Length: 319
Image 1 (cartoon, one colour):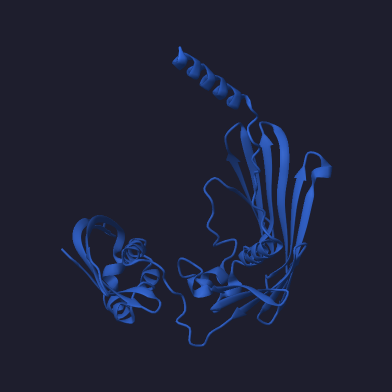
Image 2 (image 1 turned 45 degrees about the vertical axis):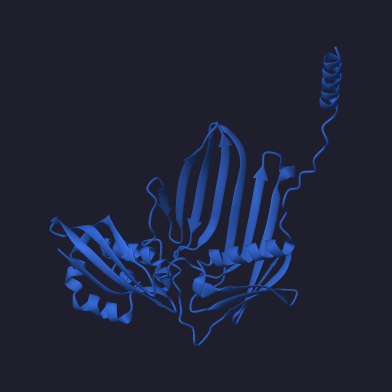
């Protein structure tokens, strides 16, 4: 009887506790500061310029209110070496076209139109307008739920006579006009200083060159370096493959150029490696040549660590 009474009291206590209102939890959402927004807007400016401001520069310094906010080593900024000459020469004729896009040309623009379909009967109609040098003049994304229009997000870019963006206007247009939003970024170029102003304030971006710089520094591991080299050779991009090599290995490629130029595809069948200050990688490859002949080879890499990353110091293929 005593045990039954204790159990009843315990059950009553549990029911009473569970019936009490759960404590309210404060949920906090992260909101970036104005400084963070300014930094993001700076990268938006340079991205619009196809990052050409970074060419031959080693350090990117962001200053807000005269104080250094951030320093970036541009030699480590990109995961691969940028072909600045190719980017500068790009125009609407050389621009790589998207498979599902439609293109319309006028005297001074190229218009790219794409429709994307998503879940819940949502689709997006995207229009991008390029100037003759493939800088984006206008980007517009319209959202639809079924046949019903939902909203439009758009960006309008204005450039100077050197194709450097001087104004970015971003708009969001809703079904109800009172919900529309607009923000404007203005840009001023003065020697090596780019000053960017928006509703968030002003950020001064200084681009610095270092005469003793080693240039682009690869952050790839030895295995990744070998993979990129193999891919470049298989795509007949010999000059790209050389970027992963020492001067000694570049001379070796040039002396046997006909072999590399005859390869049109390479498949790795796996291999082994010996790692240390010097790395040796031994792989089996299936190589396809221009005459469509496919043969199995053994590929041997020797890689060394240099100031600008891991480089292939020696390479040969054996039957």
